[in-house]
Image (cartoon, rainbow over all chains, first blue to last red):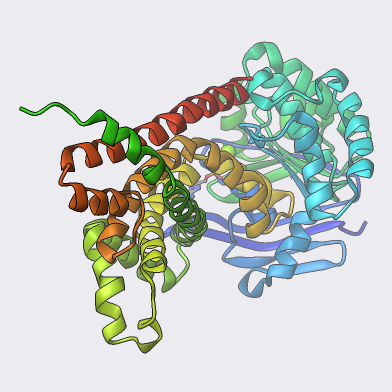
Length: 246
Length: 224
Ligand SMILES: Nc1ncnc2c1ncn2[C@@H]1O[C@H](COP(=O)(O)OP(=O)(O)O)[C@@H](O)[C@H]1O
Ligand SMILES: [Mg+2]
């Protein structure tokens, strides 16, 4: 099967700390991939490179017909890449000066040039999907963590991105809000949205992922279907990690 | 001690009052210009624009590090000697330019602080949905920074109004200059300067009331 998203030889250094050491990854259309691994291993950095929040040092990223070579990425290519990826942040990162609806419409009106009415209609549809139809006019400061993260997901959904990136979307949440956010992500996954999700919720990864990628030290150690990675891991490091997280 | 000549003071009120518009004109024009310039300087600093950043840093340091009066004399008396285009400059224009540059340096620093106070993750979120640097500053960062910086900027405006009195040293007859002329004729210095002081006081107090209203409504908007 052909890759919808193809990452080749991705390298990222911070100073002399090589955080990603040659990552190759192919996502098929509609594939849901979970990345697991110890902290400080470069999981967030992969996602951030795909969105060009961190600038990779080497490697290429192809999304559909956009191919970006880290060594000579142009501004237009970076914007094209960003417009094809939706990013969900660990700490929500909502725009504090915009309402829930405003957070969702911002990318449509400012970036895509949609009319306010068209963007509103879409935002209202998304607000319903994320279960916040009645909170469209609320500002982030007036919402619970769970609600804020659902808006964060709604903001990314609005872009109809080729690829959705979730960076530990529940790890900043109080336990009481984790369930509703996981439910929403599960529904998005059920729609066969291509996604890359970094998570420490192993049960969740096992449930929604078509493939689980185990990373350590800036490299992919092992990957495969959840049943294989969780049930019959091949590498000692994977086994040690899974034992540790229980 | 002689009693205050209150009748004379009353007579002065309409005289000084007729110069209030000029004072406000200088302050408002300089404020608008300083806000614009100060924001631009702050953005150059925050984005660390190569080369420009260094120049702006020196600019800010100079205008914060020297007295406003010295700067005004430089513009009005000094520069025209070497820059022919400035020979015809009138006192009001020189004062507005001086106030603008001086206050823009201060405002740049507080606007910069307010911009940096906006959580970094909001920049990233804005970039992640494809916004350009200009779009994210205009739509997300600056509105929040403006809210944070508003009370400080308002204080600078009040300071600016009081500082317009220095224009009198450039030969401008504004409120202070008018009071000086009146006093020179009547020799009632105390009365004349007391009246002008009261005028400044009333203007500033009126603004302070407005400022407190603004702050409490902004506070409400933020708390929601
Ligand atoms: N902006 C940065 N500057 C320097 N080092 C960084 C930066 N961001 C991440 N790192 C380092 O990169 C490594 C990987 O980070 P990250 O991708 O966040 O790991 P993970 O998400 O797997 O926990 C860590 O050692 C971290 O300290
Ligand atoms: Mg991380």
